[in-house]
Image (cartoon, rainbow, N blue to C red; front, top):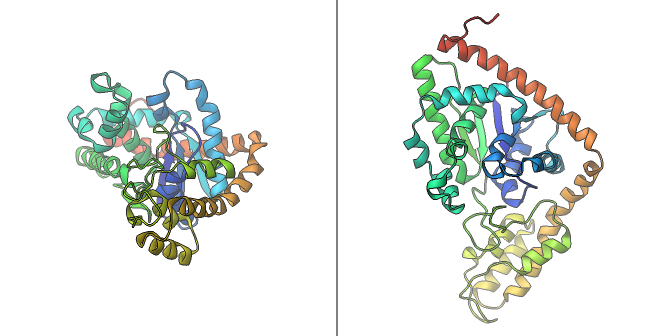
Length: 333
């Protein structure tokens, strides 16, 4: 049997380049090598969207279209919706019974996001317990590998700890997963912040038009020490060059541009123009593919319903073993 992959996203809007290099490109590469499940984590999206849940329906559709546009094949990949698999909530509750609040507060991923959102002492129970919910997602699908961005590594490590604790308590029932980091562990934001993020407003989306991409690239943060043409730059620390090194398939142009920047022969405006061309060349096939699905909501819905049914069947199998191991399968036929 093929080993299994579980990955997913919170549906909080369209996906961006950071999602692509963080894990989406790996999902596409590995979809025929592994049995792959993608979970659209709409419950977890409520940690930051509890006051406008009505947006989730369209966001789920948008995320699914981004998957398909990037090359995810719904005939071989199971795409399912978290809230439609109640077994996930059950396993989350079981895991929460032996996961300490102290360990959740120490998790670097949620700690950083809580600081970014300035929660302070007003952190919500659902947000604090996010790693427990994600551990249940991974464990219930018996995933061997989880493609993630670098910033999500602490979540996977906490998942491994939770699974180990469960297996030590009740027997070897669940699989201890491993993280799979792509070639680019984290993509810096266009404003020079540590990562591209929807909430920070520093993202280029996979569905952005060519004119929007050009506008965003023109406003990108660059090497602050390179002010005038002739100033020697530091391209390896400049988001414009970092993006070019990832998304420009002409390696010769990338190296020539880098050398010209180092010697002060190339200005930032010219460099940005080259990047905009490269990004639009990269995104154009994705945009064209997306057009096929934008007018077919019934097709997207059918994919989600079919995938969620299969996902729930798999979750049900795992929970039978979990309840039996915990000796709480009483009164069940």
